[in-house]
Picture 1 (tube, helix red, strand yellow):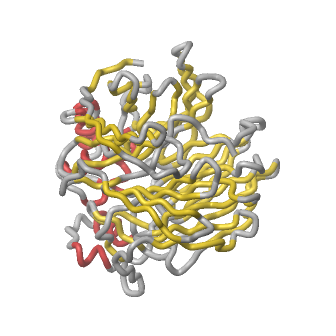
Picture 2 (cartoon, helix red, strand yellow):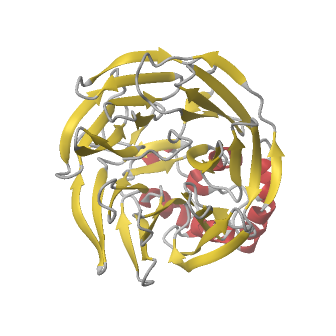
Length: 442
C-alpha cells in the first residue's frame, strides 16, 4: 500500500455519561461546504472527548484526473455529476466520512462515501493517512470487513469509468472485484469478480467465514434517470414528483462452493449478522434516494431477515412500520435473553425489533422532529441523521447526532440523559455511523 499523511490536530473537552455502561465510541461530523471532517472520540472510561479534525482539501486530485478522462471518453458534459450534484458537491459527498472499521492497536479505517483511497486514523499517535490499496484508479467500497485473526481487510472495488457510464444509464452493470489485503504480508488477493453495481456500501462475512454479503446503496430514482437520458435540466420540484427508485442489489457469495446470488432491494444499506445464528443476517432497505445533496424519503423502509443456506438465501422475515423512515443505522445485540435489532428511524425514533419474531419490541422517542409525509411525493429531509449504540450489558441505548448525545435505559423506554457536545458549528452535521475500537462480544 502507498500512504500519504494527513495532518490531525487534537482538541480535548470533558464528557460524562453518568454511569451508563457504554464502550468508548467515535462519532463523525462533516463540515458542509468543505472537504473536511472531525472525528469525535468519546472515552467513557476517562470521561472525556477528543476531537480530531481531518482536512482532505485537494484530496480529490487522487482521482479527479481519471474521472475527467473517463468523462471525455464517454462524451459526458464536463459539469455533469451523479444525482444532479455540482462538482464541488460531488467531491464533498465522495470524501464524507460514513463508517469505522477497527483494525487493532487503536487504528481505525474510516469509510469514505465514494473514493479510491482508504482513510486510516491512528488515535494513539493522533495521525491519519490516505491509503492506496493497489487497485489502480478503482473506487473502493465504503464499509469493509477486517479478519482480526488473519490480519486481512476484505473490500470491493469497481472501475471509475463504470460510474461515469452509469451517469448515462444507472441500470447498467458494473465490473466488481472483491479483494482481501494482508496487512502483514502486504499482498492483495482477488476473491471474486463479476457484474454488479457501483456505490458499493458494505462488505461483510458471516462469523463462520462461509458466506460473504455485499450491498449497493444506489440512491437513483426513475424520474431523474428519464430526464438525464433526454439531457433535460431538472428543477427541485420536478425531482420531488418522482415516485420510483431504481432497486439496489445485494450480492451473496458462498465462499466454500463459489455459488452466488444477487437480490434486488430498495436502497440496500448495511448488513449485520445474528450473534447466535451464524447463518442469519439482517439487511437494511432504506427506501431513500439522493436528490442533489438532499435525501428524499420515498416510503417506509424494511429490515429483511435472511437465512443463508447451502441452496441459497431464504427470506426468514421482515419488519416495517409506517414511521420506519431513513433507517440509517441498525445494530444487533443481546438484551435480557433476547436478540434485538436497534434501528434509527428518521427523524426522532429508535425502533427495537425482536429478531426472533421480527415484530416491534419497543419504540423509544427523542424530541419530536419534522413531520415526514410521503403520500404525494418523496419527503426531502431537513434534519441530520443520527447513530445508535447499545451498552456493553445490553441494558441501555445511546443516540448520537449533530452535537448531541442521548442515553436511555431500554426497559425504562425514554431518553433520560441528554447532553450537548461543544465544537459543532453551524456548518457541521453528523454523517454515517458510530464506530468502536473493538468488536463487541454477544
